[in-house]
Image (cartoon, rainbow, N blue to C red; front, side, top):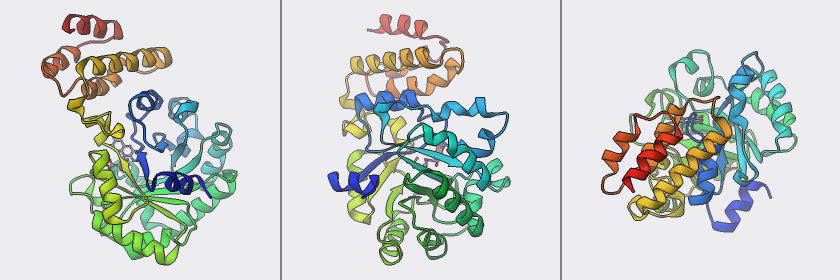
Length: 318
Ligand SMILES: Cc1cc2nc3c(=O)[nH]c(=O)nc-3n(C[C@H](O)[C@H](O)[C@H](O)COP(=O)(O)O)c2cc1C
């Protein structure tokens, strides 16, 4: 039984935090371990061509994770099978719990270089990449995160093809590449993918992704659409307590303050001097929300440049 089947057997479904570049880093994931964690974490995506170039130092932090974040899946992207193999020599030593290949990102620059969801149009290359990863990853589960198609929904053609590749898991974001985020996630189409996998590859698990805003909604979608689990991305920034099942309004402002400070202290300890403090503002916004005076406090905090200044302002408020 692989990792995904084990998790599913325990609870009946898998809850996952999506990979989000610049958001779901090791600091945030460690905080979530304290306040409400999913069953499965993914790293931010790492470009294998970048990793195999002089730019390695700029991207390697994406692979940072601590033991408590396990099970954690390393997500890779790129379109050069040899670079996947080279990158995996390093990644394997970190002992992650699985390898995920991004065939979903639809950012223009990425598409024009033929990577991520542009690969939906390159089935032969996708097969080559997956086979290379499987050979090189030392027996770890191999998965793909993708969309429903490139310029049209193509459940039979695209997802049907992926289902012939013996993957352990496929995460499906219920939009096509062309849509970015402009339309609602099509969970009814994700349900069709599940039916197709029952026919083609019953042992592959399917996680649905798109527009999940609460634990209850995630569980309801699993039941309604028949997936093996659900994945949350943007919803975690609306409510970092999402995986605990608590509504943001039910978490006291004192607890939010404590969590914010813990987050910033961990950031300082890990990355002060290597990452700009401004990268932390999105978390300040996420924690300082949903209580009287939050909006005013948030405004004051947006001008700061150090954790010390944040502490000063918080001490005045509380
Ligand atoms: C800021 C941001 C960064 C993202 N980075 C990644 C990434 O590194 N890898 C990936 O597969 N998807 C990435 N995504 C896509 C999400 O994982 C997810 O598929 C998408 O946001 C839809 O889920 P949601 O409706 O719950 O937000 C990113 C999305 C956002 C908003």
